[in-house]
Amino acid sequence: MINAVGSRLIRALIIVFVLLAAQGLSSAEVKLGILPRLGAVELNAMFRPLAEYLSKETGEQVTLVVPKDFDTFKAMVKAGQVELGFANSLIYVQLKKDAAIEPLALSAEKKGGTKFRGVIIARKDSGIDKIQQLKGKKLIFVEKDSAAGYIFQMLLLSKAGLDVNKDFIKLPFAKKHDNVTMAVFNRSADAGGIREDDLEKMKDKVDVNQLKIVSYTDYFPNWPVFATNKLNKATAEKVRAALLKLKHGEAATEKVLGSAKLTAFSPVSDRDYDHLRQAARLAGAL
Image (tube, rainbow, N blue to C red; front, side, top):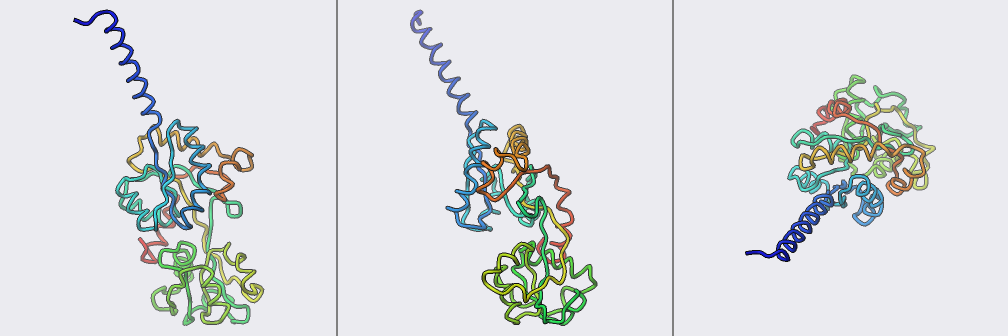
């Protein structure tokens, strides 16, 4: 038979266990996977303030995960090994095709805001002034899965009336936007497709005054933060609300997003990416 002292001890232990359990639930780990477009050390430094901010705002322990490559990132999302993800627009629509993910907020950058686009460049002395003059020419692009360095341009060329499979010569992919620019500058390609912002970044490597933009692609939505089906809906809504609190131009936002080269987050829906899906299918990337 349990005496009064024993009963009090049991009640005290039960209270301790309940408190510990509640604490464990409130600090459950939420893994935020970052698409590894840069090295792990750099990306961790860039996004650590955001993870800390989300931890504070949601009451959950948000930790960063930077996989070794794009394929590993995709595999982790599909396997439910992360609760949140941050990836480029093309990776998002590719994953959405096979995985139950939901976009929570749309990232904004200093120059392009919540949208970005690609361009087709050529030398000023090439005689190429409009898209139709690319017929029969040698074109170079970044990579098959490059949104602003291939996918966007395929839709642009198709809309201009060119058959993207036979009306021009596709040179081997250059792998990097810089390499596309160099190939056009050095005349090994007649024209090339790159992200709009990347031409200006080349001004210290080549004389960009000898290059021109032949045409601009449509604008497409920027990188989203998305939730996987492993994250419960209540926490997903907390994350969404926290991200949307980060407004452009505010000091608190700069503290959280400055190192990540972002300026804010905006509302987003999956329908916003339908135009990109059209371009990706045309290019064989979806």
